[in-house]
Image 1: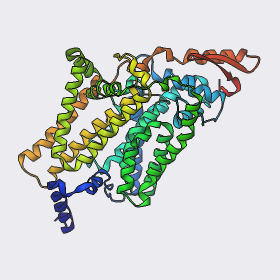
Image 2: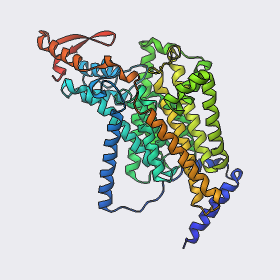
Image 3: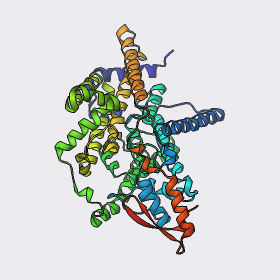
Image 4: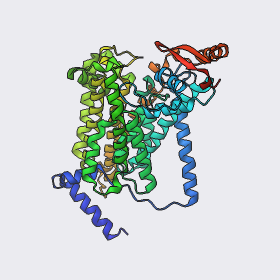
Length: 475
């Protein structure tokens, strides 16, 4: 039998759903920040088994991420700033983490570089690649847990976690590197901002994650509206470990931002995109590729880039229109996810306006990193909408249509995502450049240090020559 309190609670919820106007702003905030579902205390055996499964899931996710880069394996290369910025400076200035680069502080990438310095030089490439893959897989696992309040189905939460690991945009630039771990932290931060963990351990985790994310990526500030809503809607201090962590990370960025502006070391930041260019970037690089990287290029070949973007926008508008009309309790989340994704993409590309002047190619997408959060949030919003549709079936709606529609929605969702993931699982992008090959570079540094009389060597890293101290290099 169903307890009377449960039946009355379900009845009240059904009444609120039937009369959305009566729910008001506070009702929408309740939908946006739902309490984490209560679960019975597991036995020690169940906890041990759960820990083993989660570790295995992270390991599997990391392996999958490492396999997504074709050509020279990612563990044989060091990508971008990992090589000529963070690793080089870790050798030059051991444990000098507080350095401005590109106008802000990148805490986690610098920390990874400092730890990699202790390994044999030849192993640095696999350490950066594995670190990047493990961080991304851990973010996927975190999202699986943090999304429980919004996605009741464990299978759909697993699908959401897999969506981060198999994100179609990832092989282009952000995958398997230390420097781009910050872009995987942003989706995790979004979910941390919505999660209400019940335990102190959960609160500590979200607080730490929020600090690391904000201290590693200046675009974490674009989640300020979500944190403002959290402060307004949740008044108890215990609800704001994540808010405190995010705020501490943002405050920590302030001196680095001012230092970067004062030094004028990066002239690229002085070039800003116009409103039209930023909106075009959102359409061409976010909306269109959200259907899949290869599918976006096929649509471009058929209808041109603007025509293909219109097709993608119409399809997404139809999907979200259905969700917003039929799933009342999903509205607050869907609107928040889409707005946050839009703000993050537009702010990021506007600040780095030099990227919009570069051509968009199949294997080169300038500004790809700014598409990660908005594309993931588009997929996230669809999954949340489908989960809410599934709940109708468990609330006593036994009409044929009410049962059939959620089943069709789940089937279509899985089929579309699976097709996209298969096609976009592995393709050559900016991360696949063979010029990042680490073996010859490590061999040259080792050889030059062996011959150096001064204990220092001068090596070309990227476009400049740097002086490296040999005693800080582990041969």
